[in-house]
Image 1 (cartoon, rainbow, N blue to C red):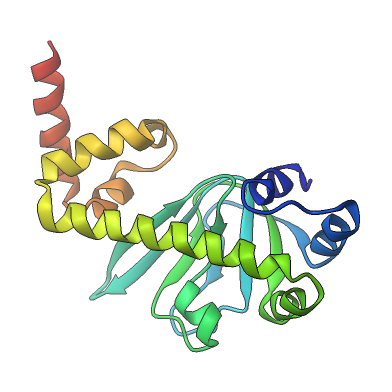
Image 2 (tube, one colour):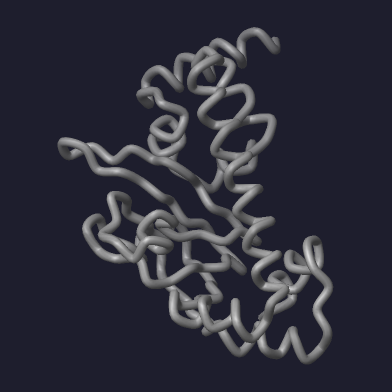
Length: 193
């Protein structure tokens, strides 16, 4: 149950068996069905999730539309981070896209880990750095790339998600309508022929 988490952690810090045990004790395993809301808009996010299996979608709600901000897959941490870190009402929602197996840590347990497992500070900083880099790349793509280029990058980096995530959600994540994405897909397919 903790193999994927330990594999991720080992990329950043080396833990002794005792430290691994402390880390494991802070998490609870949770299996959740598809379309399960983990954080609702306006709710305070009190949990951080490590995804063992499945997918999550972070999204905003605007005038009845859902705008996908991020797609989290296996071996990633996920939450409404702003809400989780500030313990303030979330301006986002987080839900499962598939049946999902999660390792869950509460805000309180995470703060306790900072005290009992000092290496956890390094781990969370390194993960936050990666999230910052990802966010910068997404923002840069929205500012500099055409919708077609954004779609092509998505396929190159996350092509398998086209089979796992409904296309209207991917279109929203890429900042386009499903019709626009369909046209781009057709155009790119014709160019390959």
